[in-house]
Amino acid sequence: SSAVSCRPFSHPGTAMLGLCCRRRAEVPKNAPLSAPGAGLRAVAEIVGGRAAEAPSEANSSSSTTPAVEKAPGGGKADEGKMCPMTGAIGYCPLGKPKGHKPGDKLPELRVMMLLVWEDGPSKVSIGVYPHMSSQWVALDLPDTSTKEEIRAQFRKLSIRYHPDKNQEPGAKERFQEISEAYAALKDVDGELAFPWDAHPDKQRSMTGIEVLRSLGALGKEAAGEDPIKAQMMQHVVKEATECNVLIFESETVTDGLRTKITQADGLCVDTRNGSNHLVKVFRRVVTVEPAAAAADAEGMDEPS
Image (cartoon, rainbow, N blue to C red):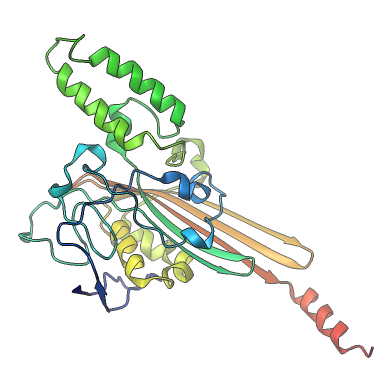
């Protein structure tokens, strides 16, 4: 096994404060990269809608998916290094990229992971998923497209630009682009939708650091479940130069229980290297109303 040491990517005022850590990981020297674009159905509950809850505890720390020869978008597996702690594609933010010099452009980063904390009816989850923005553009589709719509559009475009039928300049390259985009998105069924235009009253635009400062506390319990993965998630957001965030809040009182739900969905982009991730934080806190608690206590004190 190989020892891996990491220093925190923390920022003053954030709740996802990483802890200095030291962990050993048994990772084969030539381990293939995982493809964040696959297996999205396993996390559809949290990604599917603005008020969706997190998946079950069995999926709460999933960050790896079936190994493939190529990374989403057609990049070869050896074009980036897999972080042995997080499964990231592109480079490992928990360590210094090999051969990297200050000022060098880092490769596009792709991360998919989910953390969940539960305590009775209360639940907090944080999910980070590659949004595949360039692949949506390649297929000329919105990110709300269903699996059937993606397949139909791929068939349409692949027929139009197939080298055997289209001899125009650039057709071969366009066909390759379409094929690679479909390979990355073929298992997506609406999970990566980010309905920015549908909710103008919920919109907030800020930098990644501003997101951590203002919204970091929403996911603090889930972040505590795995500080190393929380550091990785924090880095994805912190490095973003642009974040569009939708914030939804609701509060209800039923049968003496107050339920407060907050969900923040953000599309965070690092314009320096093209990294783009959908970040979703879900927070549901259930507390007993004081009057109900007092009534319960009074009932317990009554003689039988």
